[in-house]
Image 1 (cartoon, rainbow, N blue to C red):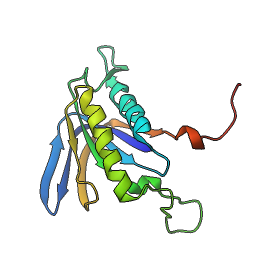
Image 2 (cartoon, rainbow, N blue to C red):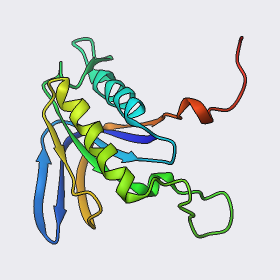
Image 3 (cartoon, one colour):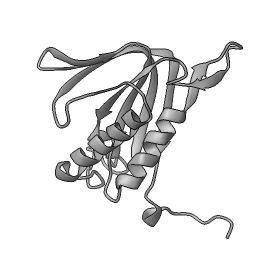
Length: 157
């Protein structure tokens, strides 16, 4: 699971020229779902996003989560985050979760965010979307969650 988070002043999603969702200040979240991702990982990702302390406190330090800042979240499914660009010039999408499996997991991720009490908007799964945003900062954060079964590397035992 790959999650790109942008702190925004505003963001909106349009499909076929019609705005389908918009938020003011908050987080624009692009969600890339990969083979091996599951409901538990989606819940972990939602908790991570909801708890990110990337809004400024009174001292001007990033120390406040989106809910504490009174912000909203807009979640857009983006399978291209699962692209393999390691060879050639055309992206490969072998890692991407097939749409029939990805859509329920996208819905689960959004539901987990909503359960935390946040106001959550969403894009239209599988649609060609126009996403507009004003990145506040700019502040952009990359979260790469890997299913436990495919984590690599060794650590302390």
